[in-house]
Image 1 (cartoon, protein in one colour):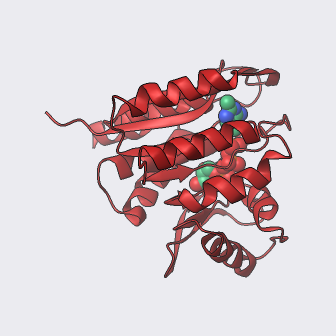
Image 2 (image 1 turned 30 degrees about the vertical axis):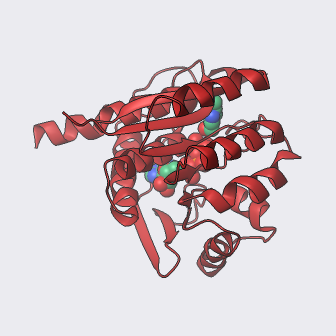
Image 3 (image 1 turned 180 degrees about the horizontal axis):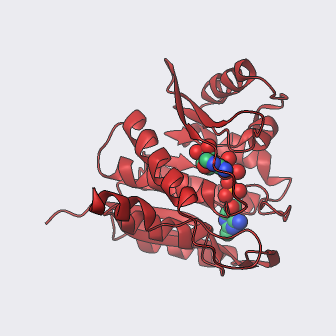
Length: 269
Ligand SMILES: Nc1ncnc2c1ncn2[C@@H]1O[C@H](COP(=O)(O)OP(=O)(O)OP(=O)(O)O)[C@@H](O)[C@H]1O
Ligand SMILES: Cc1ncc(CO)c(N)n1
């Protein structure tokens, strides 16, 4: 039996809603065998981030080699990378092991404002990792920092997606989760040739902890199965929308999404 395999390189979220935990749950729900390289431990819950503890560089490098020397992930995603040094080592491993289907979720700050990527690491992300990306999935504030442009309108989002491709990514998805001015949560995909618009109604809920991680992990899982990018983005959008809509009501503040929801809905159909 062939099981598609995927790798996440990201931070641990003790609360289980974002980071490595969200990624592995999403891989499993979509029928993909998940592996992980942990870059940092965060002490985190639905109220916020209580602590960030980066893994020492040698520990990250050894994990990368443990995977690359033995296992063959068909798709890889990055989430919280924290430092320029970690980004540098990840870029070396991506090239060495020819991890060509790379999804970059350029995680920079948690929803409560805690720093998950050091300021001086943004340039390393742009220079070293972005040119290796099959797709990069920033939200609007992340896209602004990566491109150096302010983004208010749809035209500006399209321009930013095009610019990220000019900067070396093969494709870019600019997410619309932060734009509460429209009733639709619309994401713009530029695949290097064309724009595609993937949207679902915005869900009025405080329980959106880990949406970005879950979305990019679902995309990675679908790419690991051999699906094309547009199909992967569409399935990922359906997955994260179900996860937001059927929120679990766990924790006291910004609860996690429901990683079971997409599979459970399909089972009852
Ligand atoms: N309230 C909502 N209702 C419906 N869809 C949403 C909502 N919030 C976010 N989304 C969708 O969830 C996906 C993840 O986007 P989001 O903008 O939340 O990512 P993010 O800000 O990177 O998340 P994170 O804070 O977890 O890093 C996108 O497809 C976005 O459109
Ligand atoms: C570990 C981790 N990665 C990513 C995010 C962004 O949601 C988070 N809150 N925590």
